[in-house]
Image 1 (cartoon, rainbow, N blue to C red):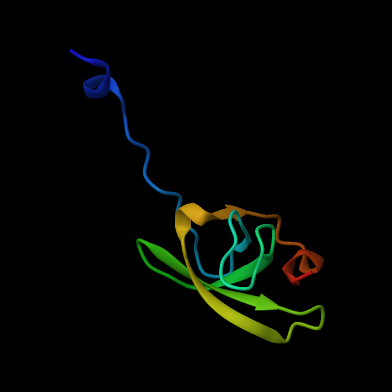
Image 2 (image 1 turned 30 degrees about the vertical axis):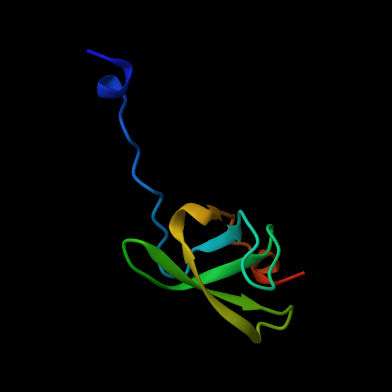
Length: 81
């Protein structure tokens, strides 16, 4: 048995609607570290809403799950910087 046969591939992380997430890489005009909220999700991607400090939507971006990190769901973490 060679090494590749013994390795297990981990599935991409999945994010659910209303999860607070952080971009792990730049996406469009949004730099890595930007925080948003998942508003739709499928097996491959999540639609993330980027909001200002008043909760007004600034943008919606489609991002692969693997390019998103989970964040605590405190309301002050839901805004773009």
